[in-house]
Image 1 (tube, rainbow, N blue to C red):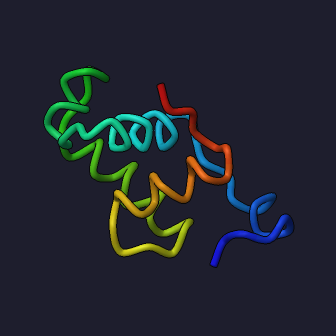
Image 2 (image 1 turned 90 degrees about the horizontal axis):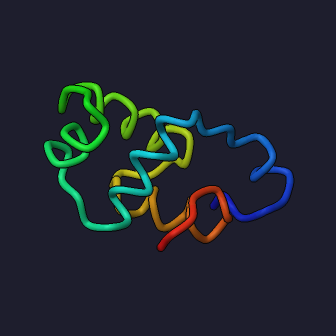
Length: 76
């Protein structure tokens, strides 16, 4: 699991990955996120898959929950 301080310090999300995860945490679809960020749905999925890989998760929602619990994204 990605909870220890040493592991958290090695997880470096890009600004786009953080933004995508933030929108996922608010329940947005990849299409919706693409519209909000003015990028393609494919680009959104690219960023989300990279974030999922960094958190070693199989789900975009799980990645967003982990990022939020570690303080890497902020929820409204």
